[in-house]
Amino acid sequence: MGAEDFSAYLEDIPGAMFRLGAASEGRDPVDLHSSRFDVDERAIETGVLAGAATLMGMLSCNWVGE
Image 1: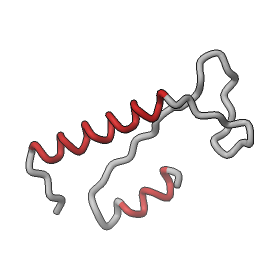
Image 2 (image 1 turned 90 degrees about the vertical axis):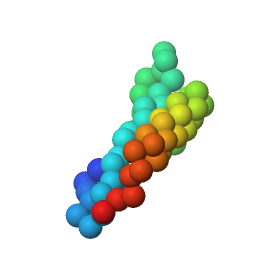
Image 3 (image 1 turned 90 degrees about the horizontal axis):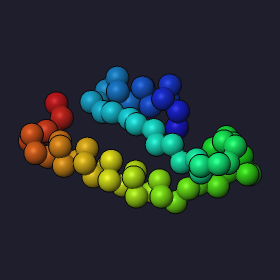
């Protein structure tokens, strides 16, 4: 889902979106939907940590939405 689609959700509920780069160093970048796409698995840990940090920040300030 691209950012332009995600924005439709934000019309009804609060939210946020971030994108995580997952290209390997030394390789030419390819499109996400390319058959040549090969994720750098180190990005998975980065993504999990970013998501967890975001969630912990929301919980620490008692965020419950609207």
